[in-house]
Image (tube, rainbow, N blue to C red):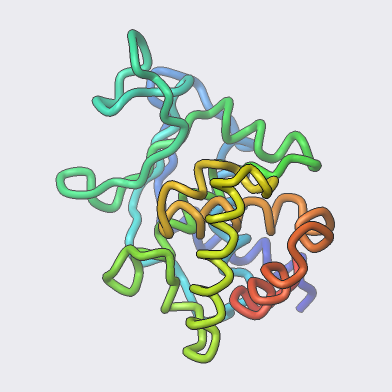
Length: 205
């Protein structure tokens, strides 16, 4: 089986398990494919792993606020994975989802960002250490590199999205967006981090 065929098989499995719903908007097959690709890409190096913590992805017409409203003030959220009564649910801004795949030179991809959060959640602790993926010998080097890079971001000495410096949790997702969306630039700018993430995700994008 080629990698393309396996990618297509993983997409089909995802579509069987997860519902994708447009909220007050029409969505098409391409939009669903972008959601599926966002899910498959981070786990593609792991033939045996699948998402067990999501049932539905909601696509909104734009950014939203903490109350999931798409109008009014405070609409600065592009993606969110649910907790509590929103358990097993993800919300994505459809324009942001499309933008993440449209510009191949971009370091941002909201779909990948949120699915990496789900991977982080899979071990029961949301801490920026994806233990369901990461072999134990890489945990200490990951923590060291992560904290070093967070300090560089805070000192404006890194091109990684500043949002990654808000917590270890967000750093994992922000760095993963960059790693998958613009691997050549990421490898050039952050060779140590790239090398470790290639081992963590078990493939080079």
